[in-house]
Length: 360
Image (cartoon, rainbow, N blue to C red):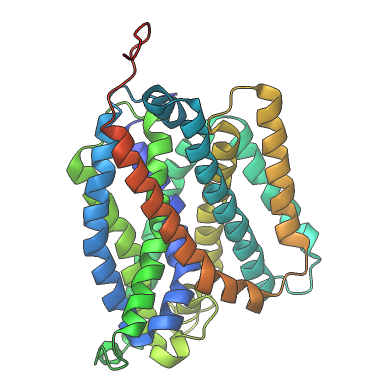
């Protein structure tokens, strides 16, 4: 299964875009308020450097081998296994939180009285179907869905222009540097998912060029900057900072003339598109990541799916979950991202082992 760089880019944009648009945004606005957009700009320049380092690591894997096999060839199976366990934990965490967040949004806005399992089961089965077949399903679905999702994003942005007051975004740095630091940590932590390009590398027909990575970073950060500016200018920094789903709330401002309103159902299409691709790709990685035994693969796959089912049906406090995500999840993701990047850069410069030779 080999795909073009454009197709893989569509997958990455939809995979990370739903996180930047829905998961990250409320936490960023909560800690930084009016300065949220400044945090995105600062994070952007840091991520340009990070993207360049990522390109360096990818360029060292010239044969486009699977990440586990490439690391094993350089350092041995033990170190490869340890690194892939870190990737496994990272992917399982983001799958769990993404699944929980999607179910919570449906419960809050659309089906508050519907039993949880009725919402959870069809969504989970759709994700399982997408992940269990092969990567083609996820890639082709992303190629079809992303243009529609993108057009809807521009539609809501332009439709709400007259409801926004961009004077709300100034002045900045009123509260000092602490909100900026906290906001940048969230932006960088939420952007660690771009490391999953390393897991998609074996499925690309040509290596990503340096400018491809930087363009991808620019698009992904734009998916945070746009709704951050839109939320602040539409609701004001204080109101925007306490909204559970600020990007979705902008859809409630959309009207077509005097007689057509309540177009927020279109946001459901965006939400489902991004959530399905994100969770399905996570499940695909969880069964594919450095494992060869088919029985063990499927055991991990169905165990992971069961964990996601529990994430949807258990009565987890949303206040507790959001506090844990803001205080611990994003800083932990940033730490994992820095650790993996540093380790992979070092591994990239280790000479490849040659079979049949002995060290003296």
